[in-house]
Length: 173
Image (cartoon, rainbow, N blue to C red; front, side):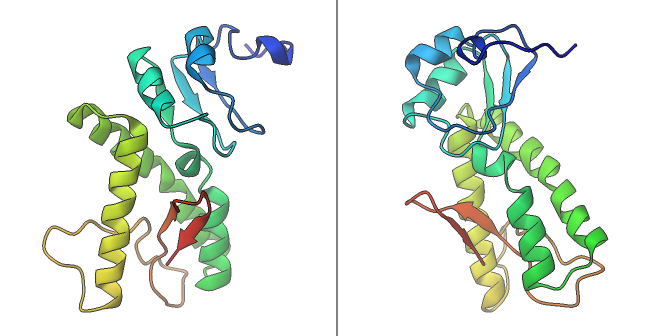
């Protein structure tokens, strides 16, 4: 059931999933205590007031998918089509692969006892390192595959890899 709630009550309204989609910085120590949804997944940028909020979410049993993972669809689709010349179906296949990335990073967080934020950063670091290796002599032993593998329907080019840069921007290779 979908029900309208006043914006001031949105964080504390009973829900299965909370989808922050427009305003960043909405989660801080106080707002986390009001959350009722066990899952937070949305594309709003910079949802956490600071990185310690990722720990607060985990301590309250709330699974949070980092915004730059949840909102990667536009970047993946655009880079696939514009940089690599992929057709619509191939770009869509890559976008649908984001679900696998989310499952992988949540499993990584769960098994390492870490937050999804730190797991996503570790995963991005490994993938960027692997992409750098692919650009050189090839991926080394144990290197993880990039975010997207070469796909039928794409005429060529390197697979794309995206991550949030330190300054909050998005970088891609």
